Length: 136
Image 1 (cartoon, rainbow, N blue to C red):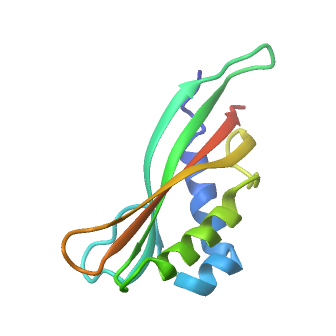
Image 2: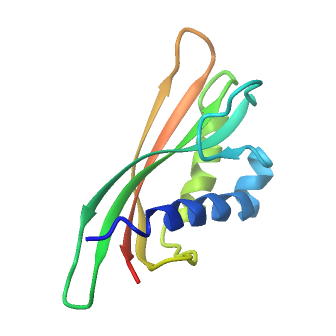
């Protein structure tokens, strides 16, 4: 197993989401690799949790990365958040953005969880993706 391609995968996902016209058309530059500090935008996307399992085979080292991309929205109702989450899913499912180290063999959407945060109008949708990465 190699965890060596993890940073490259995160960078590629982050850059891919920021460059995707469907995503940027909805959130602009408000894609973060951590929850933003200071003044938080009313709508943003944040990269989150990652779990990695070794998937080596005869061809070499690899791993399966399960990672979360979150959509957070201050607006009432889930409609806007679901629209953004759909754009994120479209941008990543079955895509293989280039990595600085290794390569993505397969990336797919697995599931989503939508919920209210606190007692206000804030909504959060966590999308879980899986990427099979071969390390080089």
